[in-house]
Length: 494
Image (cartoon, rainbow, N blue to C red; front, top):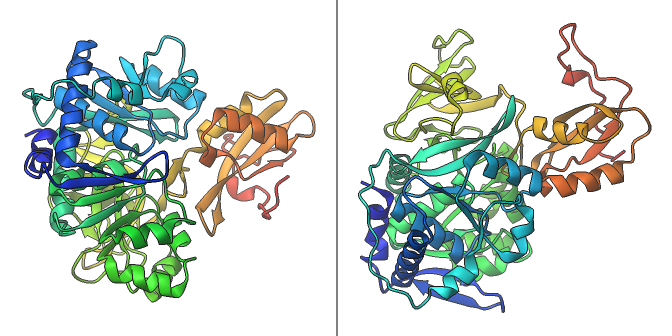
């Protein structure tokens, strides 16, 4: 089975039903039926074929949340073309690495973003292309595609180098959607408010695919906006909402009566992509009348573990493995530890990716006898409930986005006069963590100028909150930086 077969239950079976609501450029809310979406995807798939795209080719998608993103993804799925979602906040440096690694035949984006791509990369205007084929033939497009074939390359970072493309198959996405639909009891009667970016697996694999598989109604917004949240909830009255901890922190700022009204409509709030602070969990329950369902997944594995829909949702925990997902908690030798003992979490199942794109060494290092080594430290209770205890890597999670210090450090080391640089995560009440940069330089640094350079090279969420100049970085005899000995950040930028 391929993803298109799963989606046809809605795109064909509920053809005349409104599938999605979205904001237009003039501020209106437009509606699109599943049938109209299906027709657009078929037209686009035929156009892709005419332009030379073939099964196994890669196509970059550098678009904000919107109908073009969805139709491009659907067209890729139908042709066996591998979709490469690119974070819309990325800039030249990050984009150049992804397109250089994935080698897309084309990137679908908007004309005003063409300049962000390296010379020689074929950039197609998604809006113009969709408009140009609006009256084209809508005959169904279907190829014989095996479930094991790649559907997407999702780029995720590592601590020892640049970001890597996780190869996710049709079967990976199918098993993930089936688990979530069953475990969270998602049906066509639901109303899903989609605020998470579709370039991320949280918004794509969980949100978009569960919507298409069940035929529920989706309200798609470009991004979460705390100032508009109350109005959007009131207008759409969703029953289903996926968010990251930062979003829930913002929702806690709503007036008590607004929170209670939202809570009466929504049946399920889900949180992921970063640990949910216990304080946020408890405050949200008090204000909205709901215990947020926290779950745990990764770009390489989609969803692994989740708290139950019916039953106890323990604050601070991520629950139990989803059906078909096997787990182990191991010590440094790869031996299972006893319940209550912290170790590295390993997983195995139909949700787990096959490897990293064109990186056999990294793929081999990531697996042990078929088990994927997550790099996350975890503890399992006697009754099987998992609690995450931190990460073996230096990963910083800020507002649900992964930040790997090495990338920022390399950017800083490119600056004239900077001899050494190290980036660490600091606690932040709104974003969970924020990056802080420590630099050793030949002369006094200009923090404002450095920040400006970083903003031209990196996504906004990767910009260090502060640039702190030090005489030297504390190191061990072997040269490893002792981050715990760095001067603490006081909350004021240098």
